[in-house]
Length: 265
Image 1: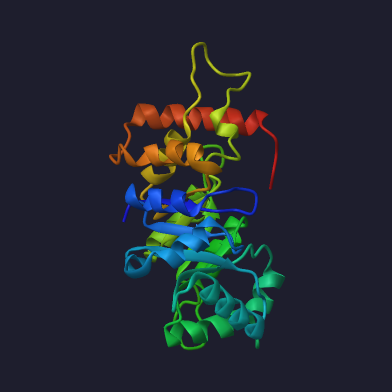
Image 2 (image 1 turned 90 degrees about the horizontal axis):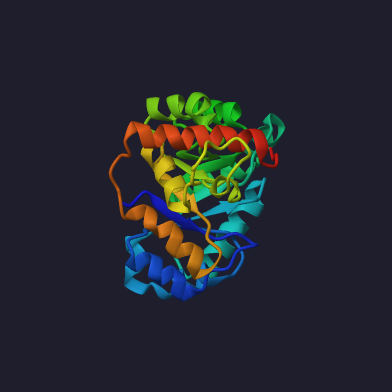
């Protein structure tokens, strides 16, 4: 599977034709924002090709009943019998994780649907890297790991996952999906500390950087419209591992962006 995935967000727009275009260009991992849009329409239209993609979305419910209802709604909206990947959405504290995995928590409901075959992989989305890595190792009462995958932020300006997450997930062969690859497009802009003649990387360069790390299974792009989608898909044109000099230049730029760009947690 190509390691570039396409996502929608509530503040971006992709039409169904754009999603089909991405599919024809080789994209096979699609992450839906959970609101009816061009991606959910396209997934309904895939027909027999539906088995050729991995369809993912985040699940906001925190208790078992809500989680099962949410999964039913997702399947109804997208015309499918199974959600390939569902991630518990933005779990940011031990208290949240405790509620999710406690009696009657969302994990109970989703694990039951996973056993029934309605859900493929059950994962978690978080900004809290050390916590997410710890949760990745946690096992349920039957000895099986609670989580099948993680979804974390990773880009040239935020490389903490290389220390906090990737050593853990690589050690247990756990897939990782990354988001915010262009750091809200801040990586596409120059900084006051840029060396003379420096040209900021393209969006495709930023996603190539993410995909170059062997622990990254899928690097998500969330383009707004066909123009940005075409920019992002250029990352698929050079699938080889970039050389060390190119990678170091992107890392150096990421450090400058981290110093100067707007902050966010």
